[in-house]
Length: 394
Image (tube, rainbow, N blue to C red):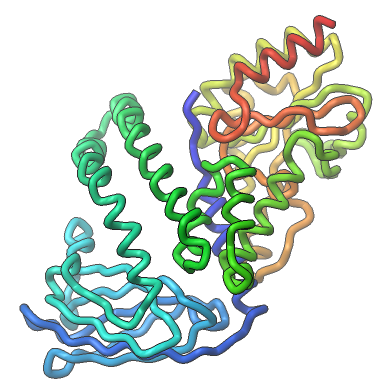
């Protein structure tokens, strides 16, 4: 079964990044000067996260093909610059030709090149950007091979055919992950490593993530990215085999109180899913079969849905898929608390370090986690089936 990477993973990580940045609160100045050639452009749009973790947008005029901007950052930070003329609306399919992503540092930097040929633009003065270009160069070959498949996917409208095309992307994605991971290991002092690792939290095994973190030098361990990685590793460990399952108390789909502590003495599967998660929905018939096979022997299932913003869609999916035979709760996502940088002790997914849907966690009668299954970095559904068979046939 293929998995769907959940969007809230990156949202949560970016919020953590903002909070850590605010805690760091080191205001280090930077300046970026630019000299543009080629077609005339009269303004640049510049976006970055400042020293307080706030996302800033600057519009700076270009005078005599030159511009200059400045700000404060806590550490080397990824920024985006868009070259445009006043009042110009850039078509979406042309945006990549006018948009440059790069790393700024707390120093003086200079950007040179043709504003309409962003791939040829060069930034001097940023060691982190040089390392980022090194990574991109190592990925250039596989990205070139991958691009025709991406183009094919973008043109395809049929959902089933899109799924087939995504299958074709997997070998390329795995190669990209392998090359990038090697970069992480060989660049333990690079802010590119501490920044980019967040994109691989859901696809690297916990021990691989820990290896990257342990490899960081002393300075990098104080970076925003390293601190957020340490938090994510801790959360994943809390939801992995060997840990005691964190208790949660909430209200189920029928309005009745539900506490995980009440299930001690039974085997329990926490099934993390969502109404919009196609692989989750496709796997429900198999979950029904497992429930019918093992429930009388002591197995319960609690579905934890990422549908807090669409509760009716959650209810409809439970009814349509005929999975109301077991218990269902919402994860407890609260976007207001996230935007205010407040921790949410009621968020079940956060308690168990969930980054991928579907994910299933098996808890034994003593309350200890004995299995984690997500078909990506943990066990597969087949592994879960074998474990359940071993438990209930002994």
